[in-house]
Image 1 (tube, rainbow, N blue to C red):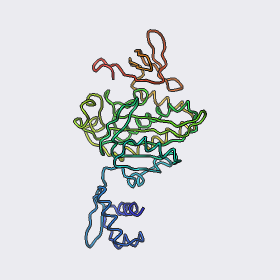
Image 2: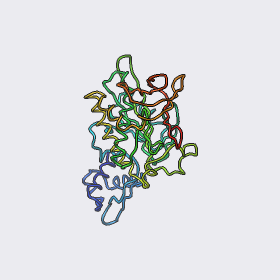
Image 3: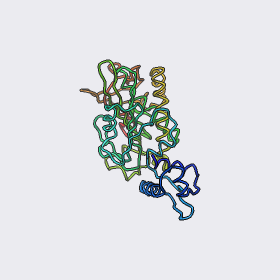
Image 4: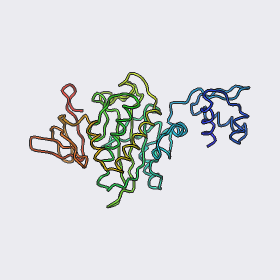
Length: 329
């Protein structure tokens, strides 16, 4: 608490010095305590200049998704108000499921600088290097029926796609159901998991991984032709914090819309962001494979694929988009 108050005080001074005596008086703690907190903030990566006569001033904040940085600029009413932060964790989804089972509030986020066992759809791993992306999970407690839960995945994809465009200007699109691509390569993965009873959802956790400032040579060899990052797409690095705040704001907007009005508008927004519809796709589903033209999604979020044998309705599986230059993606 005191550490966050020190940061807020230094920010308010906009680069001017705050003496140790003034900080001690304003926060009602000893000057020794102020110095210890300043030292801890420096260890977190804050560039704080200390002058023996003038005091302290904040020169630069680190490119880390620290709770104090998030809370200082958060514009949402619910999303991200409760934060669990890790420098390194196996999986933010695993941590979020434990918090959700223990009764954490809706909008709780679990954010990590690095994941050692990040997970994507269909039990695939997710490359999550330290401070190069946005790796987080959010907990929802929606009033929907369990049958509607899969549409939360589409909802999240819409929110993230909109936030990326708003914060970075990168023109990306959604591959059914929730991968976000740039130039045929993956920028974002989303993993949704649910705890429910027969007629009610206990909670949903949505894990989101966004490749932000990852260089081409940073990706493992097996991912270099499949994945990309926002910095590679735009030719410049981006603030992870700015992007993260935009994602939380868009999630609150789109989720609130679904809770109030249902999913019809969300599904229309998904169609507008889709890079799947109108394309020839290869589908690998439970016990079957087929190809056809992706025409639409229905009211349940299922992909409708026209094949030689008729219309196929895809609720689960792996969908690849065929492109003449690169084959299926």
